[in-house]
Image (tube, rainbow, N blue to C red):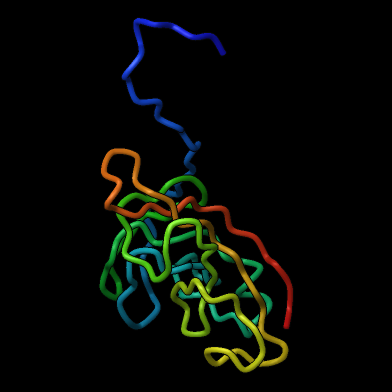
Length: 149
């Protein structure tokens, strides 16, 4: 990297490669919230992820890009930056799939927030400042299975 005095004062934007899947139908029987971790069922439709079911954890695709009702279509972000999200926690917090299928910044452990022995711990990303408005929160999505309780 070289220094160019003509660019002093400009903002360096740090990019993250994003991967998205085409929209799929929410067949969970209820609404999906933006940032809900989702998987595809045997019919190719979206469902929430249940951390107590290994097959569901292993088939986690990504996060819903928008809030939608049952039987509505929604895009899925598999990796990259999901901008302007409302999540618990603060900048730098690792986010996990919660026992209820949403997100939590509290690392799952036996006896904490409904987690029991046998449940799986899945990290979905890190909370960061928005690049254009530091008052907003973005989520850098990088889904990985941490282990089993």
